[in-house]
Image 1 (cartoon, rainbow, N blue to C red):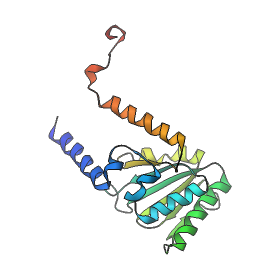
Image 2: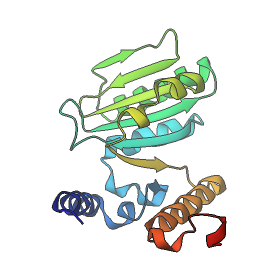
Image 3: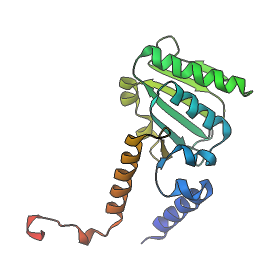
Length: 182
């Protein structure tokens, strides 16, 4: 293994350890694991869940961007839900003493951006989220998929993700290269 690759793997392990051992095990976080997040991000996630937001994801940008630390990304199924999610986030954070520096895209409600300085909330409709694909654009960021409490689908998603990562960790020689290797 090259020194550069060793440094990268070590730094990602160190980064994961800094965020807590539960989050370090994978990219899926449940509500019991939210203690590693800032209180305002936890409030944001709970506000989005209250309005039935889909596919909640947090991107940790601290090591790759200077303008913010985190993106919180959520999806709504229609214009009214996208607006309701952003309204609930703004309202709950305002009650806790945090005001948004800027809100953009509210009228069209395809992509509403709520800027809190050290984190930015992105609420998309499904089509816009697939088109802009922030997770791909910021693929160097540590991605944390967050699921609401008691979500059976999220538990299944977590198991599938864990199995995929375990399979990809196995050496290449254990996997057949052609039909004759089977």
